[in-house]
Image 1 (cartoon, rainbow, N blue to C red):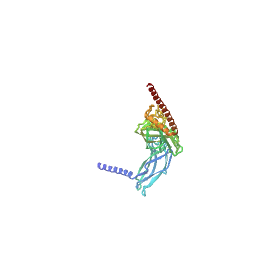
Image 2 (cartoon, rainbow, N blue to C red):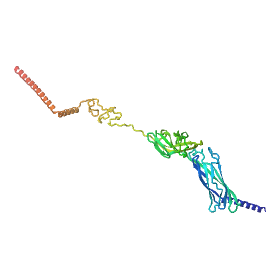
Image 3 (tube, helix red, strand yellow):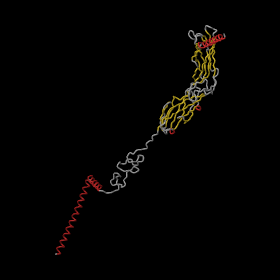
Image 4 (tube, one colour):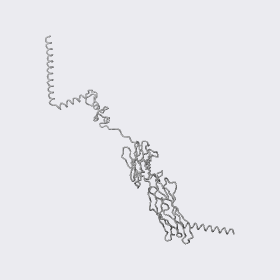
Length: 413
């Protein structure tokens, strides 16, 4: 008897459990989208957004809908209040969707909260969960009014602040000593030479749409890292209003790096703005590229030796020395015997007399004779006259000796 009563109680309990489960399984309240996700600028008011509620069960009507917004705690500079999320055009019920499922649109106004950072410490854009919207109601069986059950769904409310401090055109101006600047896009590789000084000229832009939102130069900072080591840190040079572009510079010396190696370069840009109401947020980006360091090639110091005398042109005092001549340290021809013939071409550099030189002089004399015939003839006549007078003298002298000898002999006899 007790066993029979226990079985009856168990059956009744299981029936009630299945009824409850079936009620929640078949009575389904859906929302599209399943969560609210906003992306916009701080202080921006988002209006006329909508989501769709659907009763996906043909056996139940949903009535007495209530919408509640619950704020999450722990937001930085939290100024989100119950009035920040305003729902309009509230539907009170949803039909059973028999022909077809009925849908309801809910419009709302939402003011983006200020004071939220657009980026985290790793320069990733962030999404903030600011609360939940709970939708609750009562489901009623269309054929059995007594068959009613409470129902509710939760929808997350998220906001993503737009990052409005950007590298202009996603590039920086790369300049090394002795070369014109070149635009370098993020991800590029540049070649530098040991000993170069590198200047990175950065252009940054305020992309806020609101004219009164400004980035002050004192609130902008640029940090240069090479392979993770900080090499320079500079502030902005310009305040930038909406849609304006500012400029800054960071730099490093390649001589501090090893030749033949590659290095990763990062420029972190961090900026804070007050949105015009004192509740600032963090914005910024990271710019990355790579450099390869080459060894410097020494420039040639050879100036040139136009006349080939072994003295460079910049030191040569006699730049047109003959190739036959020997030159001194100043590049001038050497002629110690001052005969007009330079050492190297002079066969007698110390003034010696040799037959060849005499012959050469004779040839020169004959050449002079050819060059001046009239003068040569006069000299020949003079030579002949001189020769004739000398012969007569010797002939008379001989005759006198013979006569004296004959005279001495005859007188002896």
